[in-house]
Length: 239
Image 1 (cartoon, rainbow, N blue to C red):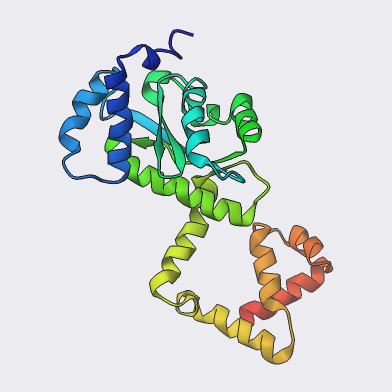
Image 2 (image 1 turned 120 degrees about the horizontal axis):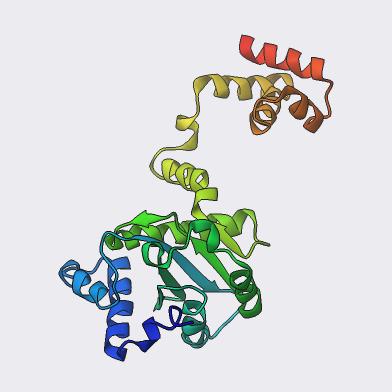
């Protein structure tokens, strides 16, 4: 219990300073780097410690500022050596994994999920990162996890960036270059062949890859006989 309330036993000015530092690091405010070390030192934290960031965003709620202010202390009490701050319309929680002894898999415990459901929050979880100054990158990860996770699985309560890295990469790649230009010429030829001959070879190839190149599993997913799928794959190689 003492570990959980350790941050709250600090002077109000110290706690406020850490919260402001978190927000300034996320927004990459100039000149904040020189003050980070002393602010962290007040809590026994170090610049080179290992951290993880969680962004809590209220859904279905209009008065987000009020609910976020109430949620900050509750969120902090779920994790040792953590600090929550309000940033824009969300609550961001920084957990010092080096000091708390927690691992990434410990983050999504039963109380965490209960809190999300009870207060109608959704959460984006960053990758584990080393160095407090990398918080801005971790925040981008949590925002991307919420964006792509909610688009693909809107019934989930939380999303890990590691599960949506490919979605982020695909979107980023296609921002400046058209998607067509990123595709292998062989794949484009296969799609054109399907359109011209009313075949489904590209679908067969996609399913085969999604099934981790397991012919039997892909054939079952496509409602095809295994031999038929093997013939399709041979034709794809030929094309």
